Image (cartoon, rainbow, N blue to C red; front, top):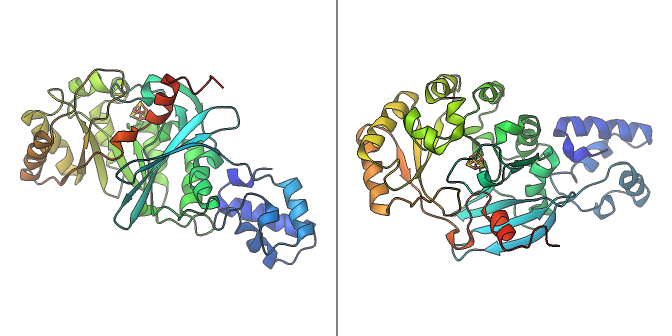
Length: 346
Ligand code: SF4
């Protein structure tokens, strides 16, 4: 049985039953559970306060599967990208972005992605498969097993569309947030989505204050259709309606593309959408690697665009490019390794 695939309160229940069956004192349940997420170990035999005999039974009953670190690349700005190998030979990546006291880990939720946003490297792969909860949470667990510090923030902005794999993401959110899991505050965990309207209700139904980022990238249906095929299914008016059920602040992610979505009128249209929701806008530089041959807007254009938003009372942040020299946009490490023939050539 894989305890790492369960929300922490459920795995605690399974371990309570295990303790009972094996005649262990009840305090042992929490002691054992601690080694799943709070002080993760490679094997139960490495858990210092568990007797060898108990560790042996635990090893036989509850495997602790691992992700394999295939490569680790550190950018000149400190951004570090990890490529993880999965048991079936697939690969996903995480990107760790240090910024002052924050250590944000950008994680993947699927191998590939079905949504084909034209500027995104992962979108060129199509969906290969969903990740299981333990494979999502494992991207943090691996860092801890290897002795790194716990990330302060989690963003679902790696490979995949998290709401398209809601069942696993739902459990992974509990693992990240629960006191018995990694204990990362809900406000420090952000789900980023292209806006799958029916699934937004599932996220809104969770009582925790998880952050929500919407990959908007264009302020009108006509423009968004050119960039995000999902707009045909869930157009902006439906999306805005669904966002009204969130009692927390929404962020709009906006990749700025030269001459496509960065005009003055785009800023005004965007302000009209963002202001009533009290949404904040992140203006993101375009990273190379998507299906379409676009150029990113200049830094001065991004600043001017932000000024227009601000003049309408909308908070806008011009984001710097992080990890450009190691292609740290979503899905790009795997895609670049594939192009070089590393993946599948082994
Ligand atoms: S931007 Fe996100 S939803 Fe769009 S193709 Fe890339 S991974 Fe998928």
